[in-house]
Image 1: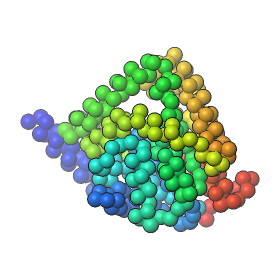
Image 2: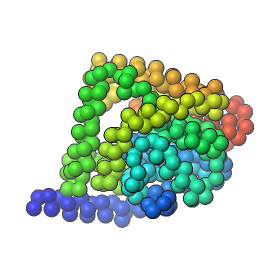
Image 3: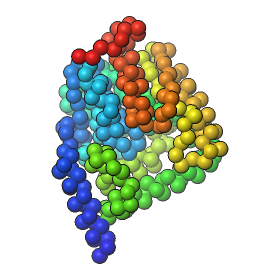
Image 4: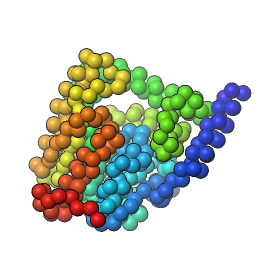
Length: 313
């Protein structure tokens, strides 16, 4: 009886959230299932935002509208997340990149693109570029994952990874009965809650997490970006990370900083920006830095001198 009550509570809550916070954007068929895409603005190249593991299109709400003032700007939900249908295919970064390519093609957004990837989506945009090199005009990596991080982080992090996996699986199995929502884990941001606090997003998060190692291997095999314009945005190494003890936090931040520097070596036309006072979600903590990073790459792609100030319409 309790589970039945929880089931109705969750479904009623999700329906209420979606009634008062409609999707926006459009859903696009990519081969028997649909992905949700939200675009605004006009111009080329289009800027495409890819969110971190388990995150929806809404994680870019502080950035995308500003970029839409100067060019077409799009964020989307990967299969199974937010307002997108679940995908029948494995949740590896290669598949995610291929699905994104099909989505952009089917909706009629012509290349080239500037790709912006946060966290694990850094894998996706690098693989997209390796698969379709002539269709990418530049990349912005926002505190991007590194293919070697699981090998190079302290061994204690692997133990914590297993703990985080159990937590993600707890959300997956209890979400249909409203337990995470009842315990306050869905947060207070209604847009994020509407898109992300549901069973299929929780299930997708687990699937992406379980495929992280394979996605890392796929990304490691992609090689150099040549002279493609690249901006690497990295979180403040002096800002404590939640859920990590102080000694482990210091070592992990040092390793992360080294790997972030290595990402700049992917291209001969790269810039790194360390986001002071920002944690992992730079697009939320310091959105102006992400905006400036995108504008830098956009100007390079358009052949505008680096010294030129960004111009908004």
